[in-house]
Amino acid sequence: MNKKITVIPGDGIGPEVIRSAIKVLDCIAAKFNHEFTYQYAKLGGVAIDEEGTPLPQRTIDLCKDSDGVLLGAVGGPKWDTLPGSLRPEKGLLGIRKALQLYANLRPVKAHKSLLDASTLKKEVVEGVDLLIVRELTGGLYFGQPQERRHEADGEAVVDTLYYKKSEIERIVKQAFELARLRNKKVTSVDKANVLESSRLWREVAVEVAGNYPDIELEHMLVDNAAMQLIRNPKQFDVVVTENMFGDILSDEASMLTGSLGMLPSASIGGDGPGLYEPIHGSAPDIAGKNIANPLATILSVAMMLRFSFHWIEEADAIEEAVTNVLEAGYRTGDIAEKGETILNTDEMTEKVLENIHLAITN
Ligand code: IPM
Ligand code: MN
Image (cartoon, rainbow, N blue to C red; front, side, top):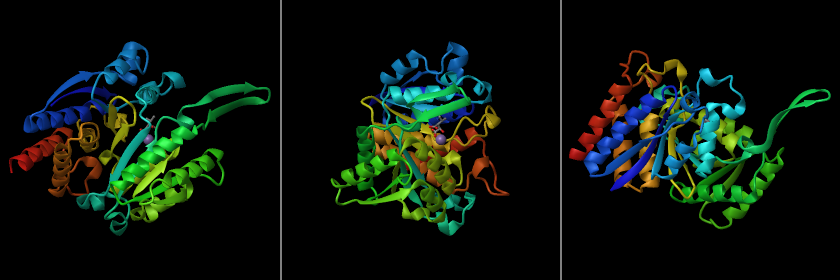
């Protein structure tokens, strides 16, 4: 099979972890008799520097004309003082919107061999396997107006939390569909004791649940959810929530796995290609040093093969290779315990490649 992939390295450690991901894709192509055509596109800081905008039209066109989009990371201190509309992050939000990627899937799985890397107790994180389904194209991130105001009595500011019922419906449905393939429980997270948007969210969740009698629905207030995630994360299966809550809770949940450097994500839902990216940022402090953890991006590749191409065997091969490499004790700096040998980005990638080879020749 031939697939065309738009590759967006972005900023900071983006290009390094993307290089690793491409090596993994090439390895899968060779092993399973596929062919990938890569087309590179600019987004974020690098696009601002070279083209004067965080999201060039050409990038949107390239993405739309492909089977999947693989993204590194965007942003960095260099562009932090630019006005909101010109920041690198605006490029990321813009491409999510342009491709109508309303569903962001963030699986959080505690790897057995990494239990000690978490700041939480082993008993708490052992066996954690949850999926955050984050609404990605609405809410505070996109609501208008979003502006500063100069009012008679001083400066003021407004962000808008806006949702159409249809937007809530489609993401909640997505969560129920995914729960059906997992442990059949959906936790809908909101702030219905305060926000009107959350009250509609809750009503819609109940309505949608009517069509899924086999799935258990529970509601949880977001402050409680933040607490429950570290108190007893094993109670969760699928967590569905609006854009901003999902952003915050997914960073929190990543620590159950020991590092932000471990978590992949898939953004899907549009008519066109899905977008796959690690949930970590561009980590400018370690950029260019070949020490970043490439596993989140490599696992994002596995998600692309699974969700966009429906190549289950190939996706499993990558995920198993990552598990094996961790079980064999290989670590990048972010997940290493005192005294453990630390591999750099390229060395870690090599270990994953070796393992894919092994798994398949066996
Ligand atoms: C994420 C990131 C982005 C977000 C930023 C970089 C705009 O934190 O993907 O979680 O808030 O969505
Ligand atoms: Mn985030």
